[in-house]
Length: 387
Ligand SMILES: Cc1ncc(COP(=O)(O)O)c(C=O)c1O
Image (cartoon, rainbow, N blue to C red; front, side):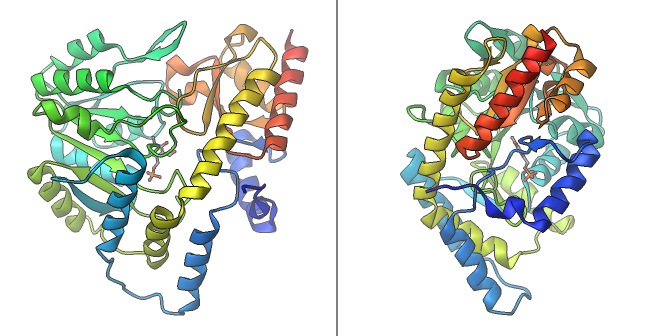
């Protein structure tokens, strides 16, 4: 069973959290639910694999065994019915480094790269830092939640300077899981216009039943779209501080270019703990993940039942990130940012994810129910004081 994470209350965690809380929110007394990671203890088999590796007392160079990739594909086949046939999976230190490398490899300076805001904060700075142009194809917000703007995508991709689209599936922060039909539309449009797709699928395992994850690889099959997708256990199991990721593609040229650029930039160093954690997560983490998905599902019900009706929890099909619609409070961006901290909460204000996120806030709900109840109580008190 999942319990509260004792390490989050250890002196080390407190020190590191207070530093980050002070930097970002100017206050270290807030209830922190803003980082996209589970606020529960690591799965026991992973912790013990890391401890066992630590006990060896040898931390020099270690060749990464091929069994790392085998463990990933076995997991994908059993959890998502996705086989690795015809696909390559290359190890990469992080999702961000994979995207940065690919943007550089697949585009030239000044070329356009499409993103769909509100979306994960790192995409825009990675594109800008590479000297490429951010092309916005914002999600459309309707009564049932968020949809892709497919007409807008047709239009953006028809611009010759647009060469890459970064797709986020499941979509952080709005919690949408894109359907096979939506993904097929993306694949077809991008194929027709010679736009490559980087599908960031790092939240793939965090799909809430009865929903099922469709890899972009599957949707792309009927087209000749060039694509690559990012995977790994870092978000699912809270291993971002230790673990590697994978870059998957069916395209030999993309795989070769990616490997060559990784070598050139020396992004190939192994971390002995990452190797142990990666494989154990995929071999032995299933039960822990099932518990986590149950916890997320029940915390969504808690939010829906407990929050003041001025706050709407947007429909969430995946991730442990709830997207709260606070627009009824009628606050502008600085006011809402202040309102959240005045309520005693460190959440991610929606405008961090693009201007379309204004009026919303993202909250990690991979936490024990008592923590979620506390957050609900603080939000409700905030509503009472604002109205
Ligand atoms: C969609 C998405 N991609 C990438 C990342 C970050 O991955 P990395 O730290 O490996 O760059 C996150 C982290 O929250 C994320 O939500």
